[in-house]
Length: 67
Image 1 (cartoon, rainbow, N blue to C red):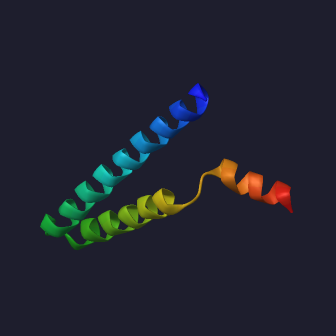
Image 2: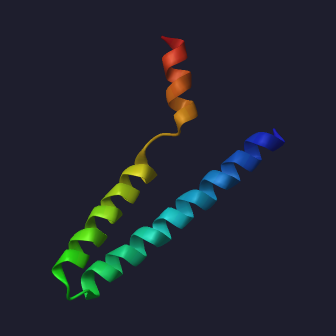
């Protein structure tokens, strides 16, 4: 039980950190006057968003084992 709670807390911390990073990149993209920088901020923001919404690897492995 303790390990599950600890894992949940770690996942919440990671999601919170990703939210902050995505928000910071969004602001940087909006205030940047350099087009290549805007493109780079946008790409990195999209990658972090994909990482954020992807299910954990362990969930994918558990799903595959059930088949």
